[in-house]
Image 1 (cartoon, rainbow, N blue to C red):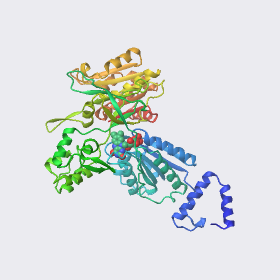
Image 2: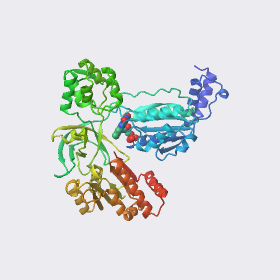
Image 3: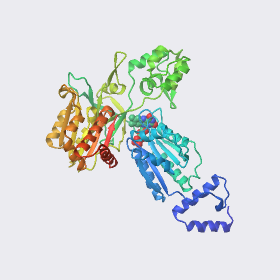
Image 4: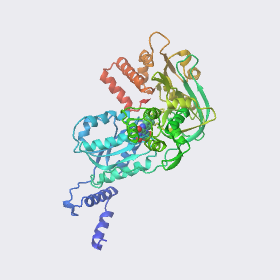
Length: 564
Ligand SMILES: Cc1cc2nc3c(=O)[nH]c(=O)nc-3n(C[C@H](O)[C@H](O)[C@H](O)COP(=O)(O)O)c2cc1C
């Protein structure tokens, strides 16, 4: 306790201070205590609270952006001037000038940074430079169903430290329900800022609390049909799922965890010499070996890190390569069921696969539709199918499918009166079926232009009658189709865009939003290249001016991609 005289001084000081001054005093005192410094103010090397910070975000589906914006707003409320910027717009040369720098970044692919953060990520990893002035914090978004949980956030956090930066708030990794953990991190960061970083000395990452996880649904399959006609090289399934009370927006996807094929699972169990009904502990629950191999664990194309652990268990030398579990068991057998139990312990979970939703809640009430291309590839002269597309294409009507909604706030329709240009060859058509059905059902007045492409008109024009009807009724203002193999030279959507260049540029100039969905490579690269050519040619701009034009569209949220 303080003697009364001192208590009075403190009370007077408190009542005369604003909220911001109190926050500063709080941090100031914590700083002094944390550093064991003298309690005499003139001896403490702490200057006034920070008033300027930079918050960068790297996002694919908008979560990191949402959090960066919320953190910026919170900082501003605390009297801190916060600049919030996407990592693809961030000038890398500014990094060495930064003093207080916060990075909010998700992990994509197999432990990779989002596309928008790639340049920044490579820059800090490749370039040897020093960031001695930098005081930083990282908030990492991820999903514990992926083996490399929050990997890019971890990498950025570690790398900034290696370059000489001081971590003023511990790395926080967040699972899919990130709000609460993110908010704790915001508060810790603000606390650190109120004392110029002196208040937060711990550097160990904050562990992730057991989260209730995402909301998953188990719903009935209503329809499952192949959209391609006889004679096509392709199989594209249109699947309708009952989805009462499932909330989503056009532009969102669903995540599906596929089951491993029965025959393969049975072969594995036979080779492993283990009872299929034997129960083992998995994530603190007893599960049978059969269910684990069928529904939970990845048995295909095991990554090098898993193969290495397998080699240690079976005491064999195995080359550093990716391989299926069944092949591993055939070439490097396990001794017995007990050894296989150890193998189960090192296998990683099956990761979810995302499918763009092709329906609109306004037009297809109580249902979700997806468009699934059945992938096939040849491997060792054998035709193999992609695990999830094969699983989905065989789903019987009336059986249940488990899924969750993966929101994508980066791929939303604009205001109803704005024009949209949609480029979606192949299954890239899916979100645009949702967009147009939604605009039709809601009576949106903006114009709609679709570019679609596939191999053959006769067999591969996905949703042909629907789009032709929309064209007739006028919801679809314009449609250009490119069927690559219907003539001697290949014709793709980008060729149609170039041919329509003049009108396309007019739409851009009058504020149209451009959406691209489908294959990242080569499609989205070629389409972007075509857009740049259109801007150069019809906007009389140089190449670098066209790039600036497209950058501005990105910044204005008028150039959006959902590519995979
Ligand atoms: C295709 C895909 C791959 C993903 N890979 C990983 C991963 O390897 N590790 C991880 O922790 N999270 C992974 N995630 C989960 C995302 O990081 C998580 O959904 C995050 O909230 C997305 O944030 P964003 O919207 O800011 O990009 C992946 C998500 C998708 C859609």
